[in-house]
Length: 256
Image (cartoon, rainbow, N blue to C red; front, side, top):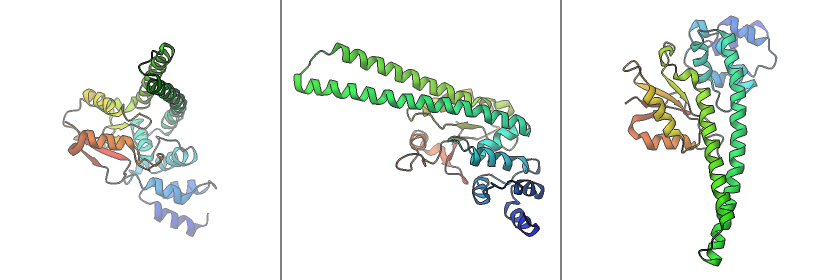
């Protein structure tokens, strides 16, 4: 990259990167500068101790290895939680990949079981409509079996989401300048309030923080571009919840 181009990039990224960081990243030919600028724009002004490494991690895990449920705020939090150690943070994000892949496999299996259950329910309904109150022991047995399987898969997802949030439950070590944060991606709509309530019950920092951050997503992966989890949180907590000023995919919940 030519010196004048480097100066231009540094001026564009001065909120988030040092000149050394821009120069280092300019050596990577596959750097999508516009996409990186968009991602970094979701962060506050970085402290000097974060300015070289956080952009690199954001580039690596929010652009090159983009995964649903990993965003710049989450990466920034982890970097500070791990005492600004880039290797520890990268290791945690790599481990996170396996958990996310297992969550996706479980969701896929869950969707299949939902389809099977709906077929059984439809069959039972049609039989009742045509034959009256007919006894269908095999179908009812299958219905209960599928419902139990679905419940177990949903429990598994909840456990896996808790695993992703392990460091976010560590209230005594929330980095300076951060609020407590809960990553809610991948939960089903009917699970999210229970999950938040469980978190609030364990929240023991008293008056140190008045709000917690709920990472709920923007709904960009849904058909109608609307986050069902976000709607559920807003309905359930009404006046105690507000949008994050810089990121629509994050809600701020007032601590009771």
